[in-house]
Structure formats: C-alpha cells, structure tokens
Image 1 (cartoon, helix red, strand yellow):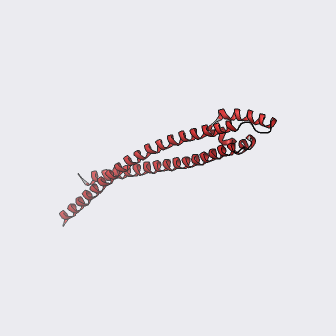
Image 2: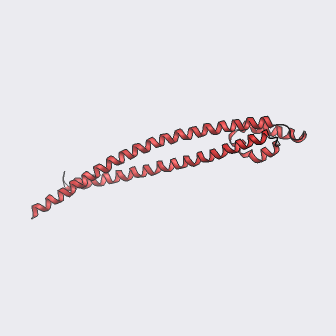
Length: 164
C-alpha cells in the first residue's frame, strides 16, 4: 500500500474510532440517566411504604392524600378518584374511611413502580450489551490503527533509505 493510501486509511480509521467513542459516551449517558430514574423510583417506592404504614396506623385519609397525592396521581390514577370519594366521606364521618383503599393504592403503586424498575433494568442490560459491542469494535479499530501507523512508518523509513 502506498503512502497516500495508507494516510487515507489512517484518516478513515481515526474517524471511525472517534465515532465509536461518541457512541460509547452516548450509551454511558443513557445508562446514567436510567440509574437516576431507578433511584427516583426507589424513593417513590419508599414513599408508598410510608403511605401504607401510615394508613394502617389510622392516619386520616386527608393526611394521606396531602402527603402522597402526587405519588397516587402518577402511579395509580384509578385509586385517586376512589380515595377522593373516601376523603369526602371521611370528612363527613370523622376521617375513618379509606384506610383499606389507601393500602390498596399503596400496593398498586408499589407494583407499578416495580414494573417500571424492571423495564428500566431490562433497558440497561440492552445498553450494556450494546456498549460491550461498541468497545469491541473500538478495540479492533485501535489495533488496525496501530498496524496502519506502523506501515506508514516503515514506508517512510524505506523511502528515506533509498535517498541515502
């Protein structure tokens, strides 16, 4: 291979290596984003546990709705309307309605969160496999880059030996 062809090959491989590094960075960023989302979901699951324990301790439905209303809206919208009915009835009858409904909502929320976490973990596994593939390709390109650089160096050395 001539010097010009070797240089062209070197430039092409350098570009390919840069592309693979960029892909690798994007995948790593996606994995970090997924880890952050899983952490948020774990926090929300702890809130659901707190909601369940508070409802079993006789805390009023009004307190539960004020503390955990956003969590219920996000993960269990069907329970929100039922809890609002119990909230209205609870205000009429001293707040004793809805504890079982709150526990059902907490259980439903936890199940929804667990499903979401499982989906995110599956996506993370796929990204990890993709990252391994990109890393393998990058190693192959780096090896070929070294080979082409050695070939260029030998070509230069041979060219200057002829001149001496």
